[in-house]
Length: 347
Image (spheres, rainbow, N blue to C red):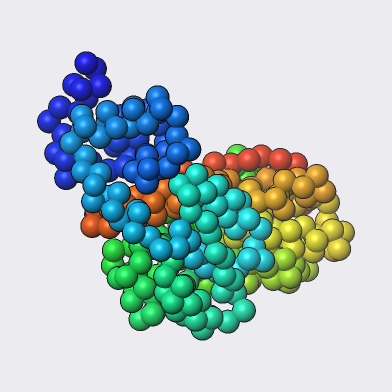
């Protein structure tokens, strides 16, 4: 009776896979498998989903048709830069959740040439994939707009491509940047530099949040641009550290973990002890940050959860193509390791 009461008065037009899943006490991917008629569902859970569908007034027939009419059971995934370790976690979460719904991912790397993104999109259209995931910083284009009008599409980790009808899932970069800077400030650091990315809404958002936070705290921003690679982080850190002591920062906040790895390399090569003389904070909490030799304090953007959320949004969009678009902003956290310590006493 309690379950029936929970669905009373619910407008069927507002019921989504998420609503059905919550009502039945199961995952959204399991609801998708029930709608597809998959045999890989226990009788008890199938009954729970079917009961939730009835009680909520959900219209599964149209959803089931959109699911069963798929020709490939494949999802095209274009990754802005497979050289960035954060994407490995994102792809793990994405692939696992898609797999639970009977879908598999076809992955393309767009980092070699920006024009390759359009070529990959066209290839996925020709392959008649059931959905498209764009992971990382990618510009809008007529080809992408055409694809999104024909194929359910999700942007993961970036808001760069402005395309109607596309769902978005991103980390909360303002909150993440704030956590990193407050941590350093609490340790007594006031000369905090930022090794900043130069392309993509995520890294530019971190840069803007850094400048805003420093200005609010009456601290002078010190921004050194880089291309968010290890080599770029190294070169930026050399420019920041190879100066007179009075101009040198005591802490560096990097746009991502790979750039932070370059910062650590430059600091050690120049003879600075981390964290006694220089604190370093990265962003992503990727495998690079978790290595024992790195042990990097970093903002956790939870790549696996972002991948899972992207898959859930895409599965819902495939099932109900006309539902309103959504933007999911995931909470970020801070993982404190051994690359940060109290600010050194300046002479």
